[in-house]
Length: 144
Image (cartoon, rainbow, N blue to C red; front, top):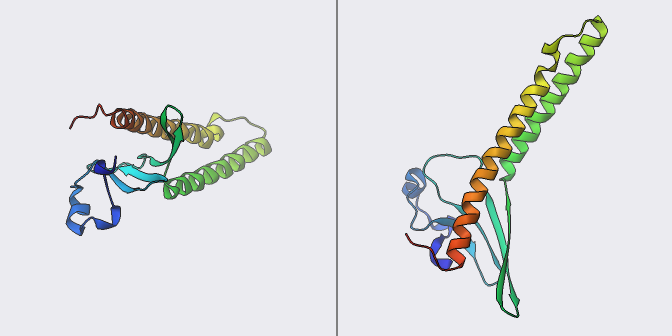
């Protein structure tokens, strides 16, 4: 696994601009565990941050992995969701005060649901591909 991870701090400025890394992942791996993310060409906000730890078992080793979105993306999504909930509540309150129901007042909630589905789909598709790749890598069936 160490062969597939390059330290994020050792990458030159040119490699960062062109996304040319000497390995498939960037981050760190040590005896206790790892914290990595896949190297991609271009930008993708849904690339998971993969944290894992190694555990010894009777039959060999076990790798426990958790995948999460980057904190910055989570903060942006929370901010947008807060704004949309506030806008939706204000819109519904104004509709209730006028006494006439309007489907347009539910617009912010529809946008919130669309964003939620888009984020869940984007993150799940990226994390599933990373999970599949890591399973192949750790079982030794990886070919480049």
